[in-house]
Image 1: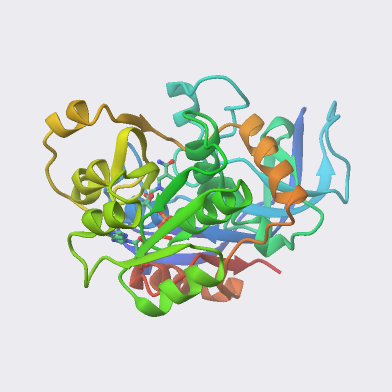
Image 2: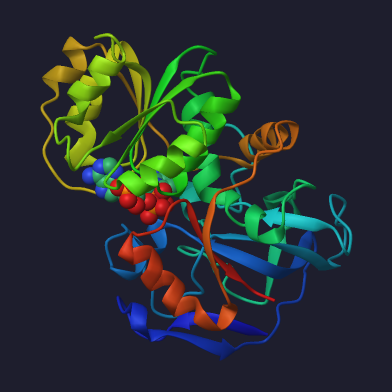
Length: 335
Ligand SMILES: NC(=O)c1ccc[n+]([C@@H]2O[C@H](COP(=O)([O-])OP(=O)(O)OC[C@H]3O[C@@H](n4cnc5c(N)ncnc54)[C@H](OP(=O)(O)O)[C@@H]3O)[C@@H](O)[C@H]2O)c1
C-alpha cells in the first residue's frame, strides 16, 4: 500500500509517500480501505515537536479517517466487507473515563495514523458512517467533531435556550456551532476575519465578534448577553484566551478547556470569584462518537469542509492548515 510518513523528526517538509506492506486483519481486526483523512491542529503540533510524548519521524500521521471495510479478521462481528466505517481517535477508549492507557493508543501519534491506503483497526474502534455523509465528510468527525460533542454534552450538558461562545472558526469551533444550534442554543462566534464571521452567520451564529478589531472581546460578549455572560465557552485558544473566556462566562458557567493555540498566563482568582466550572476535554470515547452520530443523522448535519486535497498533495494540505486561512476542516482524499 501507499502511505505517508515523516522521514525526519520535527520536519513537515519530510512528509513523503512510501510503499509499505498492506496490513493483514488479525483476530478481531477490520482492514479498512481508507477513502479520506482530515487534518487537525494536533497534526501540526506533533510535527513541530510540541506535543508531549509524541515523535514524528517514521510516523504515519493523521488520526481521522473514513473508508470501506475491505476484509475482516477471524471473530469479527460488528462489521462486514463493504460496510462504510469511520475510525476512532483512540483505539481503546470505548466508554467510561479517559485513562493513560488510551493516550498510548491515539492514532497518528502513539500508534499509526490514517494517511495510508489501508489501516487495520480493532473492530471496537470503528463506528458506522452516517448514511448521509460522504467519506470526506465522515473523516472530519473522529477528533474535531467529537471534541465539540464531548464539551457540550458529556460534562455540564448544554440545555436548550443556553448561550454558547465559540472561539475562532476552526474545525472544533464550527462543529460546536452546528451542534449548539441543533440543540436550540444561542451562539456567539468570534474570528479574526469578517469574511469568516459572515460564513459563521450563514451556519446559524446569532452574534459575531471580530477578536482582532475587538481585542477586549469578552466585554462584547457581556454586552451581547445583557451583562450576564455565556453558559458555555468552547475554549480552543488556551492560555492566551482563557482569562478572557472566564470573564465572558456567567457566574457558575462552564469553560470547556480544549485548545492550546495561544500562550499566556492565568490568574486563578477569577475562576473562584466567578465560580467557573473549568473542565478539560480530550476528544472522546467510542460510545460518545455513536451518541454524536445519532444527532448528526437525526438533524442531517453536514460537516463544514474548507478544502479537499488529493492524496498526492498531503504536504500542501498540512501547509494550508498551518496558514490558518481555512474555515472548518481540511480534508485529504485517498482515492
Ligand atoms: N483537547 C482536545 O481533545 C482537542 C481536540 C481537538 C483540538 N484541540 C485543540 O483545539 C485547538 C483548535 O483545534 P482545531 O483543530 O479546531 O484548529 P484549527 O481548525 O486549525 O482552527 C484554528 C482556528 O483557531 C482560531 N484562533 C487562532 N488563534 C485564536 C485566538 N487567539 N482567539 C480565537 N481564535 C483563535 C482561528 O480562527 P479564525 O481564523 O476564525 O480567527 C484559527 O483558524 C487546537 O489547539 C487543538 O490542538 C484539542
